[in-house]
Length: 331
Ligand code: ATP
Image (cartoon, rainbow, N blue to C red; front, top):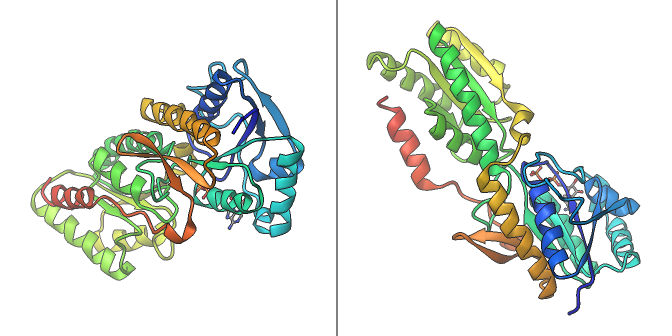
């Protein structure tokens, strides 16, 4: 099929490297003489036809910039069929031959709904710090978010050591433990709490206390850092800190890393990934591939169907879980 004009939007939680995706799509399209426009503010901008032209000049020096030039947003009303039909009409009015949606699982549900009522390709690029999109090995933004968490945890270790404190640090991830597990390994944290393995508050508290006791007997690190995925502890972090402090008599501090993990310049990994996936997304549109994501599998871009019935929960790496448990018992 002849492709003359395509659009791109960024949706859901923002992630470092979304700009690199916009740049790659724009440059790959320009090299094939395809015009590109960007809808602003996720699906909101699509519904309102709020758009900007994207040219090689627009994306100059965009590769290394955090955030998203097009802004991101959540758009609840996009879940209603009449809004999806309105969006398809906007795409038709612009005489578009394809749409690229950069986002996570929710954004891909929107992309699929749109694909059902529009006959041109809608292609996803997994862009979320959470890495919770099944089918692709990695999502754009994930590596940078871990790097940010690791740098923060290193600093926490310095201050925690000085006062021989326990620190509970909460990292992002929604319902997935990828950021928590890998930042814990990367920063040498002493314990990690993950949605995938969490049982009950009582059991988990017992495990933490057991490990603290062993480490005290081993005369291990003076401080103890516990990494936890956001919103996981029933009753919140204060509740966990109070329980720990009363059982151990050790000073406990809590810290929520929060949105800093979404910001900053993407690292080299996310820049390369975004460039591969953005370029491949344009190729998929030219090949008229519908309802797929431009994802990465074993280092190569792959067209992965956006089929919700096939999307299982993406599993953590067993080996990473194993080593985290093994090494924290002895150091
Ligand atoms: P992240 O996980 O990084 O926050 P995400 O894309 O999963 O990214 P969501 O907030 O789940 O973020 O979804 C983003 C947007 O996708 C929603 O605000 C909505 O516009 C659209 N969306 C989500 N689910 C659906 C659905 N079932 N049908 C249509 N659109 C949807």
